[in-house]
Amino acid sequence: MNPDPGAPLMMGVDPSRFGGDEFVVRFRQGRDARSIPPVRWQGIDNVTSANKVADLIDKFNPDAVCIDSGAGGGVIDILRSRRYRVHEISFGSSKGIDRQWANWGTQLYARVRDWLPGGCLDRDARLFTDLTARDYEFYGKAQDQQILEQKEIFKAKIGRSPGDGDAFALTFGVNVARKDGNSANNRRIRVEGADDPVFT
Image 1 (cartoon, rainbow, N blue to C red):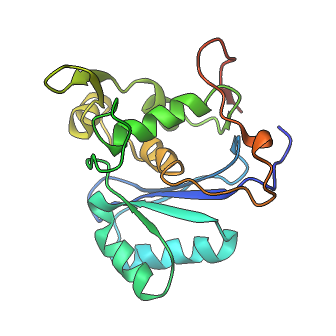
Image 2: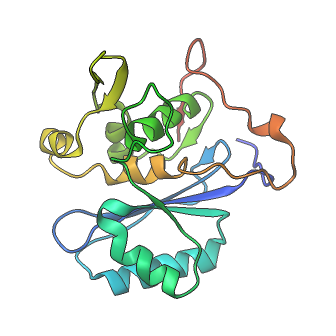
Image 3: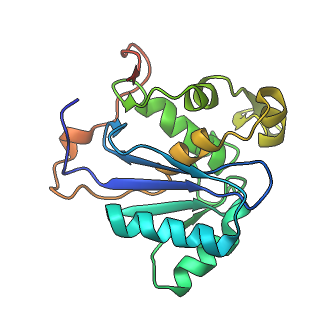
């Protein structure tokens, strides 16, 4: 894959605090979600995790940092107190989303689906499972919305939290303009009739 330095570098953060779940950070720049490897840790407090996230922000200088607010409230507050600009994303919120989706989590995974054809991912079994094994169902009074399988149900099914999938989905949490203003180089490709994603 040819590098696309004009595309914004996006950083997705799926936090956890103590327990068995991993804290996962993933990056994406245009069609490239492979060049910067994911970072994981577990079993540490919010202050230490915030320090680690801050170090990654300082190192890679992403154009946007999107953090899941579910378990990330403490990390978000700490980073903002240190003047880091981060975007708080609530997977369960329905505010401001397209009508066909039930919540932000579903819409983010739909954006991932649309990106995958032609996208370049690292060869990680956890990410592959998170992006391919999670079901959805129809939702709402008219059954005209789609909703992603609940995280706790999916977690019980695969035996762990889908941290890699969620962190990657968070790289689609906000729209950021290209650095070179050339939108054609980063045009989203629809799933229908497109090639399979590349896992390398």
